[in-house]
Image 1 (cartoon, helix red, strand yellow):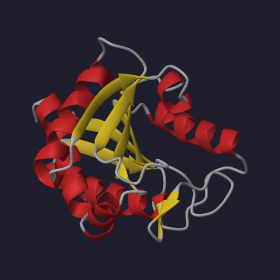
Image 2 (cartoon, rainbow, N blue to C red):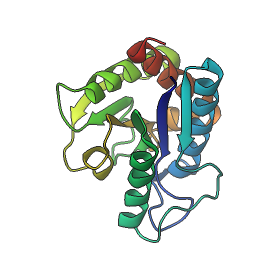
Image 3 (cartoon, rainbow, N blue to C red):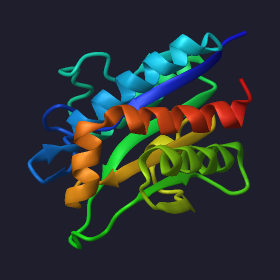
Length: 187
């Protein structure tokens, strides 16, 4: 039986719920491309069934931040996803901030372990620093999902090197997340 992975490409193409911007790039565009590449890798494996929150670049979810988040979570819950992975880019007022990090609702948990494996995969494929896993109980997509959920901050859109790598090589980020999922699930 296929493992169901719901890939949430964070944010919308435009407000409400548009993402961070930096170095002439938009978070929602980067995570859209990484999500599509990740879905292709998972489908090619044959052991996964995949759904994307944004199947097209102009998919707009909800009419406010709260409805956008609620609809993403509801779709994953109703589909019966086994895992929920929300893709984001980080931002900081300190342009030297760099690396990948991820969040889960609790530790120990399947989500926390999955996030650790994803971060190892991202470090291996991108060379970006592994900033580690953290617990975040206030994030809607981690709190309201019925399955283990991980929010992944791929890199810093405000860091010129991270931003350039995410923009020019979204495939590396997809490959890293894919490796983490395969390591965690063992398929």
